Length: 106
Image 1 (cartoon, rainbow, N blue to C red):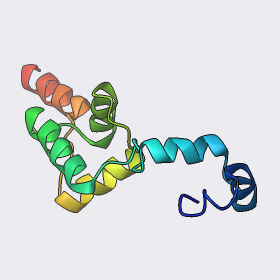
Image 2: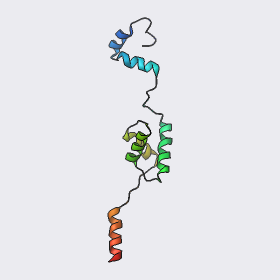
Image 3: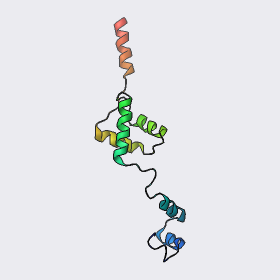
Image 4: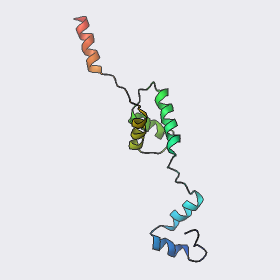
């Protein structure tokens, strides 16, 4: 559209291509989608959060942490990146620990 904006009206081109004019102008201001983040950058941030929380956080918690930092991506993308890098969250088996404590005192 940018190449032909001198020859044809933007309104007409937007109608033909099925794009809103506001979307076209916002693309001109910022060609890269502001919510898309480079894979490597996101990978580094996820690893940083994972290490800072003693390798306990899984994808839902890391996803929430990214949201707090105003980094927008999907929970599934976070899970996929974690799976590709071998990051696994841990959890405490409270019932089993409580069972052992009960057995020890009786």
